[in-house]
Image (cartoon, rainbow, N blue to C red; front, side, top):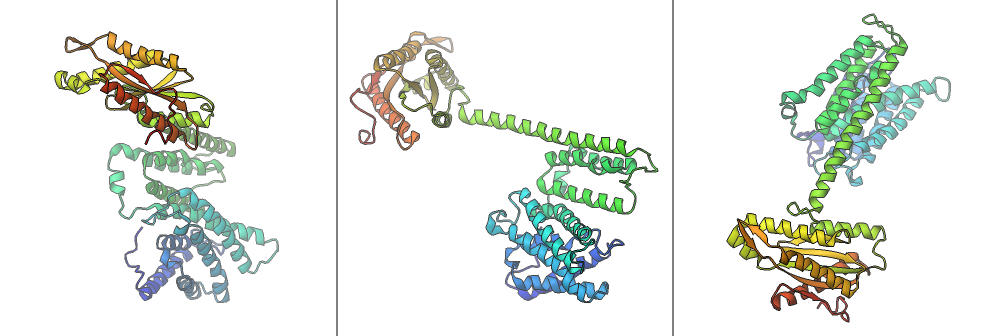
Length: 477
């Protein structure tokens, strides 16, 4: 929603525009009056609230006074009110003040384009604003505390709350450039709207107390298929349509409709059925979202080629173990493993062959480590194996087992049996301290130094960190 005519630096023009806008929609609301004194649909409060929220510089007393003056002017001129025009319209300003204050951008609910970050924040704002507005309006009618106060208060509250929750989500999520045509451009995406229209038609034909809930499943389908602003707009149109149909007797919620006579129980049963379908639709959608999130997590935490942990996945796993207190008092060992002369494999046999070597090396590592540790593709042709609770003899045996498993069985690359070797650097220590990340990174750096020694010494060998040297920040500098 964008009002290009409003300009922060031109207050007099803003006064005129707000006065005319308020008076016009008050005139519209006044002509929707029921036999009672309140309006069937009173849009001005929600409209002005949306404008004041999306243009926070309007949140000043002078602009509220302009809107109040326009309301009084309209009721005095067209409704024949005198003193009541001054008192009752105070309730409208109360609604605006409360709702705008709760949805103010300073609360972090509105983004830079003036759209709400969470549409759910609208509901508590509408609820409190409607309560305050109804309290002021009922008392302003001069009812005080008598038997007519509660019915009057409920009329005020239901009118303001229903209007607010119908209009504000649409107005506060509407993008500055509408994409309605593109959203409905594909034929298959029109099905939710068609179902919505059919459900309203069924509500008119069947009638009864349950008929008002008939559009709910279709609206949920719209929520799954369309953007938030479009779903809010369809909800707004549905709500207005149902209110108008009920008031004019087209939708007979009392039952015994002449179009299709059904008992109150039958209508209630159908209404309960539509309500029961609604959470099922939501549950199925949420289950699909959870499965998608799980797949995305797997992709982020696992290397797509070797199916082993990625670097981020390994760190995430460490944090999970830390939260479960599974690292306390345990000795951790890091094996940093680099494939020797990997560039020559790519140059001589192609990158496809290099990828096949990476996959096969990772599988052999995993078979050797089994369930006793974690295998991670740390980057390029470099792998990391994390083991726990091994002494120096066991650690050397495990590292040498990995090295021999890769070296002894040759790799078939384009019909050639090729020997592949690895160099390994090993470091051990406690994953204790202020940060598990820092402790782990110190182990990795220490293992990297031992890996460098292995490669400098001729490759295809394992080098352990000396037992009397601990991987602290001092030894790594």
